[in-house]
Each structure stands twice: as C-alpha cells, then as structure tokens.
Image (cartoon, rainbow, N blue to C red):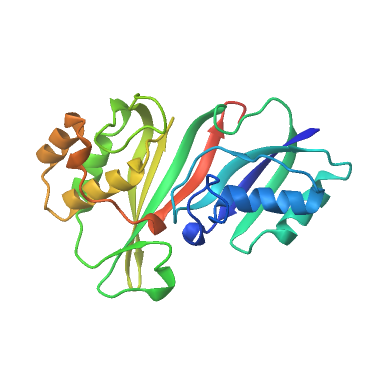
Amino acid sequence: MTRYRATVAYDGRAYQGFQRQASGIPTIQAALEHAIEQITRQTASVTGAGRTDTGVHATGQVIAFEVDWKHPTSTLLKAINAVLPEDIALLDLDETEAFHPRFDAISRTYAYTILQAAQRQPLLRYQTWYIPYRLDLASMQAAADHFVGEHDFATFGQPPQGINTVRSVYHSHWSLVPQGYGDLWIYRIEANGFLYHMVRRMVGMLVEVGRGSLTLAAFIENFESRDLSRAKLLAPPQGLVLEKVRYSME
C-alpha cells in the first residue's frame, strides 16, 4: 500500500461539511472516497486536516489516503479529478510516508470575506457575507488584535472532543479591498487549531464592533468571560475558506 498526500479545493455549498456522515448525506470526505474507489477499485479512508462546516469552502485542505497503485502518481491525480464532482478538485498529489494531515499540522489559516456595498452582487452571494451598512476598520482591527497569542476561546466555540478551549493565534488581520461596487473586507486568521464555529463567531462579534453596536471594552469583556452565549451573531458559512495548512517540514 502507498500513502498519498493531496491538497484539495472545494466549493462547500452542496455539502454537509467535510466529515463523512450517514449514508446518503453529501460530504466532501464521502465524495473523495467514492472517487478514489471508482478509480482504484479499493476502499480508502480519507483523513483531512480540518473538519470544515456545512457550506464552508477550501482552497488548501490537506488529505491523506492509502491505496495499492502501480501506475504513476500523475495518472492517479488526473483519474481521480476526472470522476470527482466539478465542485471538488485535487490540486496536487504526492507519495508520502508517516504523515497525518491533522496531527502533523502546526497551523491552519482561514479567510472570511464580507461584501460591504449599497447593493448586493449576485455573483458573490456564495463567497461572501453581504452587509449593506458601514463598518469601521480601525475598531475591528483593534478588536482582532486581542485574539493574537494563547487564550481561552470558550466564548467563540466548543472543542470537537475533550474540554480544552485554549488555542494559540499567530495572525489576526483585516484587509480592505476597494471595488467599483463597494468593498471586500477580508479577515485572515492563523492558529494552531480552531473550535467548532470559532471563526464564524469571531467574525460575527468583530462585525458588531465594526458597526458600533458593541464597544471595544464590551468586546474584551465578552472574550474574557469564556461564555459561549455572549457570541450571539454567527457569520454565515459561505464567506469562510480554509486557505492553508502549515506543516513543520514546509
């Protein structure tokens, strides 16, 4: 058996998240495993670096799987992509040895995009959160700066397993990209791990700060409370993208 590593991109709107669920429920993992089985005639278990939520996208998800394949890796890459749905693609494929996409990762980077404009942009409806009101960049960045470092993020999410809600955030930054129709607000965060719905709750509270409905002092109080009920606004999933997974050897 040969172990393979691949980078995967997908449009998550047609899927109930990455992780395999009950038979008949569409997920990214299930679609990948089905495509691999079609090509290799073998049952393969796909492991992912992150369990993205329903409707969340990826440009840099990382997976691993094992199959017995006697042909070039490039042939396997082309063959799997040929049978995958059009909204999922392997961007690369390489042989690897002792590699685990989740446990070997040292950080993951997510990006969240907001469209702030007077009118909606229909072509962006599945990639952004449309907000018609004004936002204040300085106050949103001031709040986002408080995420950097090691903190207890219990206010913003629950762990997939266990009770540890402490995470280390390495980068937390807003970028404003002017467009002819309005502005794209891109929030990018890199951390050693994320809680369930963590980024979407963080973005929701940052937007409350940006529109003036939450002061910076109240934001800090909510953050330090470690009370999940304080994060009332959950940003919609379509604006969120898993951009990159970083490993020590890279």
